[in-house]
Length: 132
Image 1: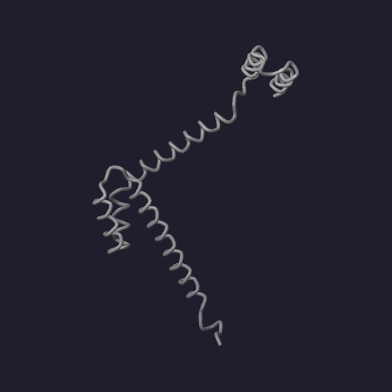
Image 2: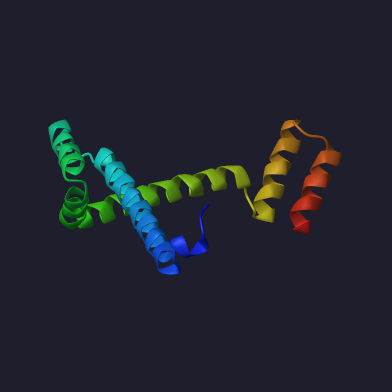
């Protein structure tokens, strides 16, 4: 039977510290591998060499990669985030449509003149545009 005194509080804290340190190292390892595979400026052989280095000497390999490639990692991350933001902005603009009431009414008037929509539909679009 396990008694509480067999596992003192300081050992609990030490175990938690080791666990979280290991978790953070795994997180850094995934970040390094993600950056390594995202890179376009290095050949397949260079990526293979980095992977072998990180596998053979795990802690040293990760820390050397972070020290050697910190600037490149930052630039690649920023460019990827800017590309994602640009795509999101384009998507929102394409879905949101025109928020200018004058342009909405003008588009509705053009559709009315073409016979695509009826006068009632035009009035409804005009009312929505003017309301907000």
